[in-house]
Length: 236
Image (tube, rainbow, N blue to C red):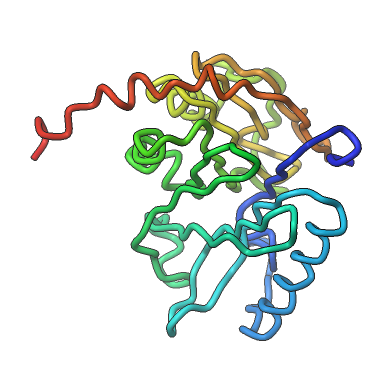
């Protein structure tokens, strides 16, 4: 278990509650009451195990149905949530996009969250967090299928889908850590991975094998140098 290994924070894949709807997987739309009850249970789990949790889940807010990542402290307090603001075109009929970005802090660690499609294809979401002082950006996602595809064997292989290369770039172009967390699938298109500020993959979970990565980072190495050198005025 993560707490046995000294972890202070654990992140789960995209829409872990109630699960991501796929063409081959039917997921019943949860009610507002069910999602609130699930969140209350998560708070109890976090407090009982003294570990902070990033839990991607569906959520209702002011009449909107959102794809979010809730952040819960080790004391069981909800610190807020990050919405998925850039939806994949295929998601336009499932969720409504969010409009805000947030920085969170747990045990002195500042971090941001970008969810799946927006982290892979909208690097601005990660740069914003880096410029706001985040040492790491967590990236819950889903990529792959249990029905068809190619079984990957080598992380970052030149013939693999671009997703793992995108993970490297999100870290390297901002000089921060990037933690991408996905589902275990028969035909994964990317592995759950931790990338260092220099773009090196520090750890990844083997394709098709359920498990948890427990790794230590050094926030001092996440200087955000390249992100902070960005000259926004050149693009106004």
